[in-house]
Amino acid sequence: MTAHVSDRFQSFAEFYPYYLQEHSNPTCRRLHYAGSSLVLLILAYSLLTQQWLWLLAVPVAGYGFAWVGHYVFEKNRPATFKYPLYSLLGDWVMLKDAFTGRIQF
Image (cartoon, one colour):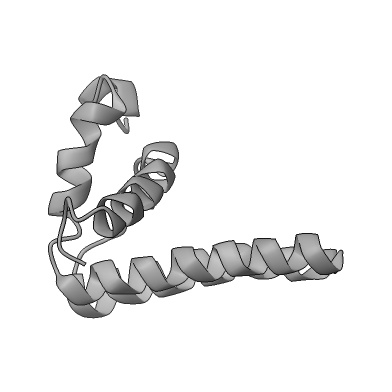
């Protein structure tokens, strides 16, 4: 039986160091940043133009860049498959941490 998030991590604070370890390759992290930034641009464009069909591109942009980073550069399986909610939150916290200088961009 597969363990649940709560079986291994009791909080996002416990999960985040694991998440960063899974993103130790700089190219992988940069691809995550590119995907997350593109998601924000698509969301803004959709809201400003009310062209809602663009919202279909959000998961493609977000996950596409990230998965290339994992499979090609990091050589690991994305945390999204085991920890979808914590992983999604981790993407945004990692982007914030890069912009604030807490981790290497």
